[in-house]
Image 1 (spheres, rainbow, N blue to C red):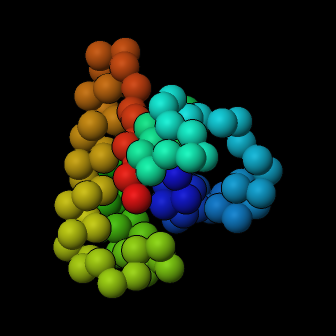
Image 2 (cartoon, rainbow, N blue to C red):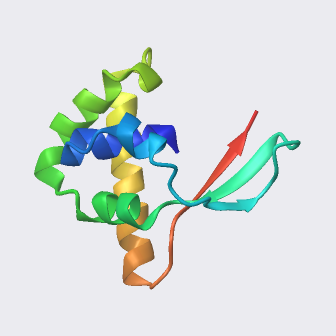
Image 3 (cartoon, one colour):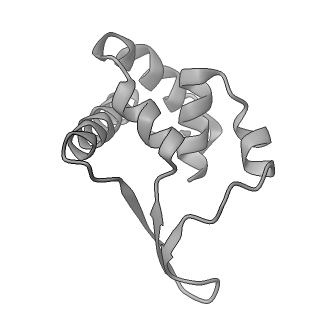
Length: 106
């Protein structure tokens, strides 16, 4: 979820650290502190930011997101591909009145 908060900062300018420190509501769908796997519902705001991201902004946003500490070392082309996939999934989910979820495994 931190990566999506950073992406949100790149797109909207809303400070990711301040948002994280505001203690947003728990979005955990499955998993607990004792688990190594979790499923989170993507926050509505982040979902909308993804679904609304225009194609002409993808290269700029991907480049800035790739430069973030969280994605350090990822090739910019891979970040752009991942971002394009996330945007496509968000649009498809919105069109079908569904939502996005994130699976995390340690």
